[in-house]
Image (cartoon, rainbow, N blue to C red; front, top):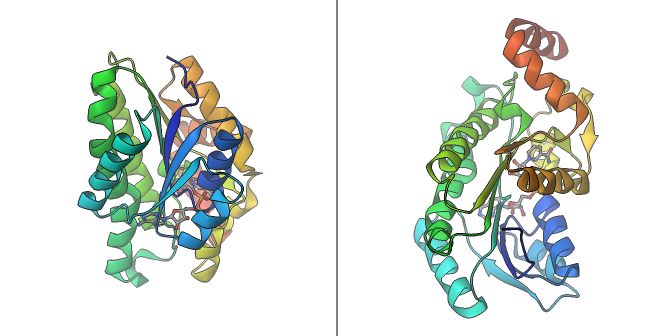
Length: 256
Ligand SMILES: NC(=O)c1ccc[n+]([C@@H]2O[C@H](COP(=O)([O-])OP(=O)(O)OC[C@H]3O[C@@H](n4cnc5c(N)ncnc54)[C@H](O)[C@@H]3O)[C@@H](O)[C@H]2O)c1
């Protein structure tokens, strides 16, 4: 069943794609609950809308996530769509990276998804309808130098999402895992604060609206994966057929 625009929950709703999608759905008349650690960003997202409800929740805290979903269902009604957009993206050479940072990337980007899925899905599966969207990345398919922690977390998101889809393919829910290339959002500031890999920076950069439109098409067509952007589909094919060439391009771009 298609999204009827009643109630969506969006993690990472305080910035970037989560913010853009929240405001788009709210403009279309939906009620949206947003979860983020960025209270200033959430206030910006909600400004002008009394149908956007803010929850300051760290998605790595499974109890807090479960509590927030219970509160949302009991106070705002049945959740029809869940969008997992929260993530972090520090970059760097793996051996130079503080292992606490490497582990935190996995715990937010992958662990957060698992916390949300287990909190959100049981009542949705019982009702037999709704959308569940997870954000992987082109880097989850095409690993490259200097993005080890982030790319590994996004590969984990892909496997998790694919298995989740297959385990629930007869449930009536729609699942989509989106794998965008670079998108113009504040996330890149975290890379700029660490190191910016040259190869993805050379490729196409999409707008949040282009990514959102591709996810809507993915949900309508019943495909479990969305690959927004022309270069993404080409990159996926190159990685499958010629992984050595893709690594060569990464080494050449970074110069080591
Ligand atoms: N921007 C890109 O180039 C790009 C490319 C491919 C995939 N993605 C993915 O798209 C999604 C959205 O990214 P974006 O570019 O909009 O990022 P963004 O940085 O603009 O927004 C991410 C939000 O997640 C929140 N967040 C971080 N850790 C959190 C935590 N522990 N608990 C709750 N909230 C937390 C941040 O506060 C922020 O508001 C992410 O999953 C990202 O990995 C982004």
